[in-house]
Image (cartoon, rainbow, N blue to C red; front, side, top):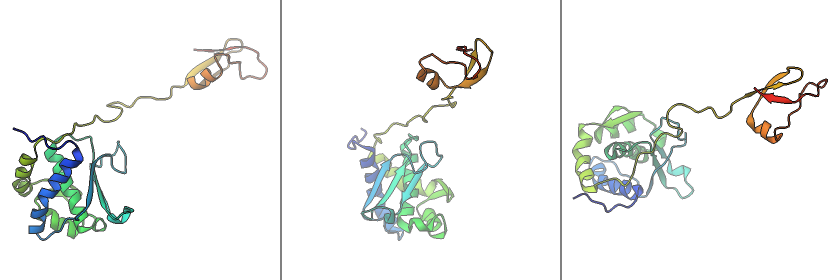
Amino acid sequence: MTNTTYKTREEWLHAFTDAARPMFKELGYELPKTLRLSVGFTSKGARSKRIGECWSNESSEDGVCEIFITPLLGDAARIADILTHELIHATVGVAAGHKKPFVDCMKAVGLAGKPTATVAGDGWWKWAQPILDDLGDLPHAKLAQPGGGASKQTTRMLKCECGSCGFTFRTTAKWLEAADGMVRCPDPFCEGDVGIG
């Protein structure tokens, strides 16, 4: 039977982190005692390709490190391995970036790939899979990318033409609505009405 103890994503993320603490400590790394963990968009926004972000404790008024994981992912294991990456930043210090302190910890906890784009390696699965099994389902559903698919044109320029002199120009529906459909020709020598064509 699957564990349904966790009502929020944040509870689940904290439970994963608490379960990972002893493993980090055994490897010589101390996770910060207090962390804020959230599923939410990173500082680059919803359209960014950034999937996780750790804010230094120096950025927070109360000195607490904050981690955000994008809601555009749905797989619990992938979210947990991204969380692990961000926990490394919180542990070695955000200022270290993806340099040696980060790389050393990354390898120790079993993440693989480039330091800027890690994935779960065999070593990570070894300690993380039992935690994931114990935690059960992540109470989360993947969000679709805002706007979904092709970008939608938000402003359409409408062609307008004077019925008397043939003067043409383009404007948005907003300005035609503002004129309440009563648009006079912009030519100062013409008194014609403008139609949309």
